Image (cartoon, rainbow, N blue to C red; front, side):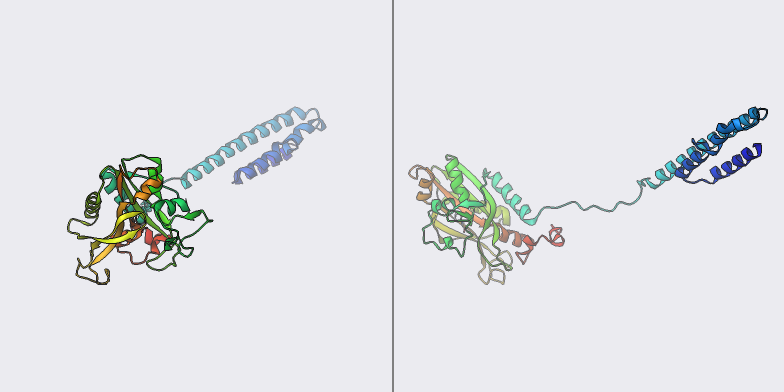
Length: 339
Ligand code: PHE
């Protein structure tokens, strides 16, 4: 029996020594010290040993047991320490290592230009108004004095949701909303997305952007319109730019004008960009038609106003030398990250 104990003790010591996994150590503990473990068995079966030997065997068995217990506990601590050290090692952050540069996001070129224009107009005392992109036919056409036979109402040109609802074709609908909601003096701009049924090519898109302006007050005249637009255009394109007002027709303004600026490429001599004209059209404008004021409950005998509207996409394209409108809508990160 003594010999057996000795053997078990030696075997167990070696096995504990060779263990590298906590799990295996646990198994060893069960194997020797568990309820059915080898040492436990011996202690349980002490009664089969002769009574003279019993105390000694019992003593040795207990010594072996406590030795194994402390060996296993020690090994357990060793293994736990090792695991902890390994984990600390693997999770160590080297703060001196060179960081991969995370490029910050940037604004879309349309947003950049829109904000720039908003800044200019805010500086001139305008407020920013907005309206929905899904608009009533009334706000988009009727209230804007657009005759029933006007070509812009055509199904070929406008996206109709139903007979009374369209995707707005112009930000001018915000004029109507603003004048209905507020009494003069009114001085707002309204940038936003508009829709027209166009085939997509380098200069056309069924979705594009406009910026509308509206001023209504007593004694507003064409000279107010002219000063405002000249001031704006010079802030945007510089003092040397030449500006040309050309008579035009819009249902909602009378008189109406289209405004051209001298070509920034050739300076007015005529080139490919301005198609030999020397000038490029950038906005439509005019004095708010009395019918439009009336439609919004504003007395045209007391108040008058001017309005203007411009396409933002072209301004963006010119500003950043972008030669294809589609780039603004493709969401190609290689393009967008350049701004
Ligand atoms: N809404 C017109 C367009 O889309 C532009 C415009 C706005 C003209 C305001 C005059 C006054 O072409």
